[in-house]
Amino acid sequence: MAVNLHRVVVLVLTVSWTFALASCAGSTNHGHDRDAGSYVVDPAEVTVDDRFEVEVRDGLVVGGVPRFEVSTGRVVSVLLTVDRVDQVHLHVYDAVADVGPGVEAEVVVRAAVPGVFEAELHGSGLRVFELEVS
Ligand SMILES: [Cu+2]
Image 1 (tube, rainbow, N blue to C red):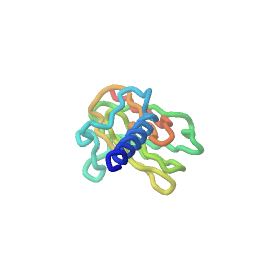
Image 2: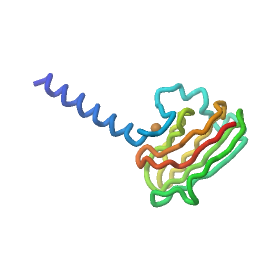
Image 3: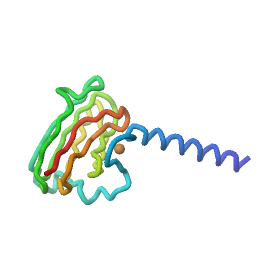
Image 4: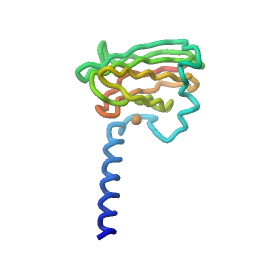
């Protein structure tokens, strides 16, 4: 009996994990296993060079999905307001923050890696902004 129970638990965990990743499936440059410490910075300890804001309402990005263009090396802050509980993830930079009604998410990174990077909501799968570093 104990073995069977264990199998069920493992199966449930596997299915949950698959669903957790499903919303990120199809995105490029996606991963959760990097060391986020190298790019994510504490806004209290650095001077933010470039500030941006994004609002999501009724499942859509207000004004359309923006692409924020910054120069390499800048410290970038993106303040996100979402009308539902979710979690934002900036790919490659691997900045993750909870967001929801009354809880703004601020993603702050040092733009050390050139390229175009997507940020999305894990729950809804919605792409919320792109960060272009060059
Ligand atoms: Cu993700």
